Length: 148
Length: 141
Image (cartoon, rainbow over all chains, first blue to last red; front, top):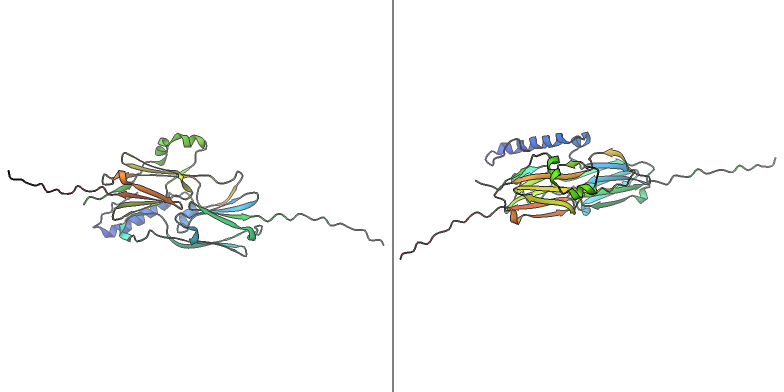
């Protein structure tokens, strides 16, 4: 919602309006994590029987611009969300979406089989499957009686 | 200077949701939360461009309609989680997207085009052509 009506001949108010709008937008979020971390796309983590599932909202990203890597227990996501091409700043009436390059790393539990981590990206939603290592079954050790 | 205007509608989302097709509602008995998607609006040479982030929304699950001068976008996100998934860490809430806008008369409703790609909706709202001044020939008899 616009608090101040932006007029073209009042350039100083343009920035102020945007900032106030953004502030108000961010306060409407009920989640504290989002409020502090708005420059990064939000992620959720779920646990299922067989795997962990990390979901990230990355609208406007193509899968070529997305880089998912696992190395020694660290999962790293890198991505670029391009701004609309060839649009000058002053043409924007409203700007609420986040753009730019960002990177996030997560420590993944030791129970995850790193070799089998897979990712899929559809409709701006990234799903990263982190399969659990099958539990090592307890092994019974046979006690053999040695003749005295 | 008259310009095409696009004003986000401040009407509460739940009221607009009530008007929405009830077929979709009855398929999902559990009421899913609705969120205001973030948008950008900019001026282009042809008119206004509206961009909305709708991650998880497909062409089939997006409902974009104009009634009178109100443009409403309603995007449903198909739930993909298996039953029994336990939420360990949350930064966003699952739900659908709803937002509506008031269009000014300068927008040509007939020529609005929209496309959805990778969860981003782009709607082009062209300016209605202004009436051209017409010279009236004055004839002698």
